[in-house]
Image (cartoon, rainbow, N blue to C red; front, side, top):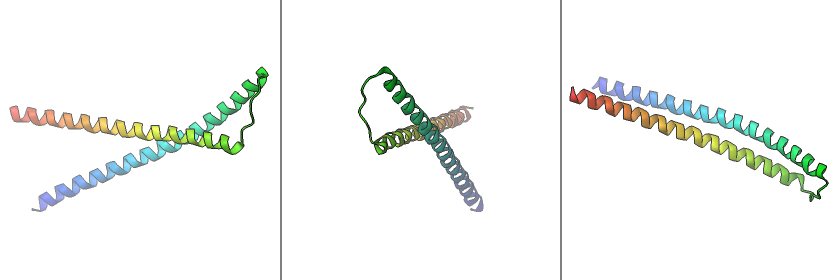
Length: 111
């Protein structure tokens, strides 16, 4: 009976560390993506304004809060895409591990 409890506890502990590791990866990747996305959008906004103004075309004034809203929204969208990419990678990894374990079990059963 004690061996069963030890095995279950080991599996739970391992699963908990996997979850903490994945959560840490998502937080780090999300933070870096948000910072890089915000910087890229701010630079693109400034370059776009200079390009439009140098051509002599008329552009309508935009409230600075609206510009900030667009920049933060774009950074949030990039962060969400990065987090979903990590989630998809973990799903594919778990599916691959599951297929590998199933193949190993089938080989063991046939032998």
